[in-house]
Length: 427
Image (cartoon, rainbow, N blue to C red):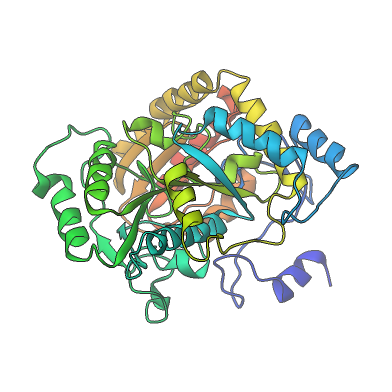
């Protein structure tokens, strides 16, 4: 049995039917922009391996940091113990994160960071004497991960987890923010989405612990870019009603949108933020949940006083070392100029897609490029074309999109956009 035959018979890949797994490529090596397959074919990883590999594969600074840490301390429990990589990373995060967020809880993955944020919000509300506040509000078309509580705040109708609705906690959903980032803001609550948000939050304020959403960019929910003023005004509404504001920046953090954090588009900050994906430059699974002193000390002042969460691999030294190296790489360069260059080139090279008959929209924000079709696009068909194009793209829903690594040069980016245009014409 070959490697791929074994894979198809025994290994279950994400979002696949085991009886019809579709085209799967055996990657033997990865470096920089490129994935090298078992037959020698090289593909540009236009997805940054699900949006995390912002410095490219096998970045020497990050891999060296992991190697060096491996020789000293691969792992130690974080209960009652600490280590330099965790502390050094914490210092770096406080340098770059929104200034109010001064408490850091390290997590295993992005989904876990959402679970932590939601538990943190509930425990805070209980500590403040609001035992009935254990539910959440969110916007439709959102996505926050595949773990159990995170699934409950993903879109209940069109999201990937809708079939679990009968088993999940019932949450409070409002329409997604209707004003896009390139439209002029309107103060009319009936048109900017805030009227509906106020109605839901006021009606159930005694039940809602937090309002969670992806700031500015809805990722898996459709690569939708909305106006940051919605967040500014949602902050005031949450404060008025005693509801915590949670930003899920797992996909948007670390420069991807053209700002260091999507929060930076706003004039306000959340109570809790979830970070992941690009945190380690994609080299090892890791995430964190950050909050402000008010929430942290509030949890500490309640019963039982301790925050009830503690992953086995919390603050893994290898991951902390990788994350510190990744963030040093990011902040040590003109990342803003790099992302702006990528955005400008994508706008120019994706513009012809607007004239194609089945294209609904073309949009770019930072290093995110999207061609939205009028129909669903087959990821399997796109994968089958990858070796011919020399580009690995994985569409979802109606969206043909890319999130290229920040190291992508003009020629490679042109190859990516050409591949997107081809998929828009042929699929």
